[in-house]
Each structure stands twice: as structure tokens, then as C-alpha cells.
Image 1 (cartoon, rainbow, N blue to C red):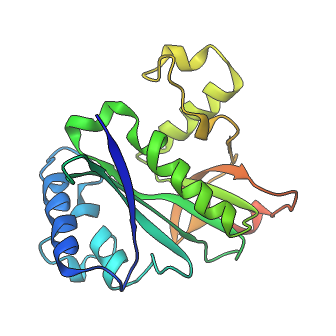
Image 2: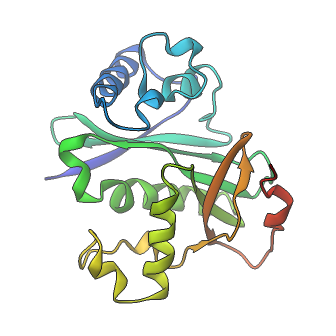
Length: 209
């Protein structure tokens, strides 16, 4: 299947495209057992501060000056995946990517985020002369970050998991920070991709109970 990436920005989305994004969110939210489905809520989204639609339209986290939201479309212009990136609040040269990532269930095992959207975001982040890009994980998804860490330390490990021989390049030089950190007042684990020789004190955002 052929895919294409388009980028949209907070405050600059045509109503017809916003309706398509809402339709995508409705499909995502219909997955009753998915732990992150509330991030895709449509009904009452204006009051759901963690929802993709709220971040996009009200918080305006994806303004062109600090980031963007990517949509992955099929050849017939159906949205099958979304993911965004933005400049962190804790350092102007560190960006967070993979934000509110979601792939529709029937496309989920194609590694679409890692193959299309994260590489796209990384090139955009590099163009902003960033020092680092990170992917953050909460309590329920931190096991995936640990899987990446194990895979990068053991060349045979990816074959044992669902990656098979298609371990995504985007993950190969990322490292897992040893302690949880505080991002947007939420406890997170992070994978770090260094983009310059500049160092950041990750302990400065270390999570403390």
C-alpha cells in the first residue's frame, strides 16, 4: 500500500480537514479496550485537556513555530495514523516527537509510525538545529521503551519480538534514560536521540514523588 504524509498546524486547519481528523479520532476512540483511547475522544473534546483535538485546537501545541502534527494518508486520502512533535517546555533545543501517536487497528502491525511519521518528524527537528529529540512513554507504555533499549543492546533481540527483520532505523541509536522524568506534570520515561554534542542534564527534570 502507498502512503503519504501531510503536516498540519494548530490554528491553520481547514474545517473540512478538521472534520476528517475528528472522524479518525472517532474510529480510534471506538477501541474500547485501548488504554489510551481517551486521547482520541471527540465528544466534549473542548474540555478534555489530554485529547489530541484539544492539544491541536485549544492548547495549540502544534503551532508552526514550535512543531506540527503529521497525518498518514492512503492513496485514497484516508487517514490511518497520526503523530505530532513540539519543542519541549524545559529546553528550547530539545523536541518531543511521537506525540499522541495512533494507528488504526487494521494497520497497526505495519510499523507505520516508525517507518513514516517519526522519520518525517526527525528531519523537521534536525532542520530546527535541535540538540536532541525524545519520545516519551507513560506508565502503561513504558514497556515498549524498555523493549527498544534491550533491542539496541542485543542485536538478536529485535528478531525475538514483533519487529522481525524490520527493526526501524529510527530507534537504533536511541537510549533509555534510567529514571522517569516530569513532562507536562506527568511521570514519563524517555528514549533519547542525540542530535548534537551539546549535553543536557536530564536529572534536572527527574520525577520526584
